[in-house]
Length: 281
Image (cartoon, rainbow, N blue to C red; front, side, top):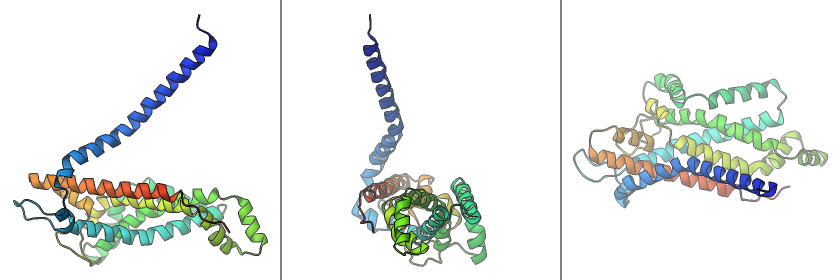
């Protein structure tokens, strides 16, 4: 007869096995994606891929240096706008959580987080492109910043709420004003998590294609003018993957591999940022 202790052990092992299977099922798509990208795209990786423009149709070779530069400029500009606004909004929503403005801001952020990116791209086209009467990298940065602000805000708000109230009370008791306590004590304490959330939001917008189709449009040339159309890696992947030429398909796979590696590096950096220790005042 099976003892009760053996039965409990059997159930425990069964549940552990089921959880292990669930973990494998969850990570399997990621490994399948990475495997496909490496198999299809690694063969075209070379120094020229990172330093040259696309070759003319019918010629072998070429690269996406113009798209890498465009991605850095568009995403960088969006981050310069979206991260400070998101952090400031998150600080306000957390430190003044009982006010009507904080409640409205939180609700709007939740709605924007659930809004499809193509809708954000259409809004950016209406507000920026249609007003300027031409496509531009600035319009693309505007659309990506709109996607970034609510993500950074909600992350900042949740992390700031985790800061113990004792730190706030100690700072106020020492004569710090409310705003100084928020910036010097609260923000500094929550900074590792905020950096993590910001990096993850950058990784999130780096692969967006729909907003850039309505705004940045794309280009075959190097450009440093944010007021003109500009290439980006997601746009190159979209164009080459839907093109009729086999060489374009190879470049699309390789550009996808580069893009996923950028996201992977940012995600690893976000994980490392959480390990950084900041001295508390």
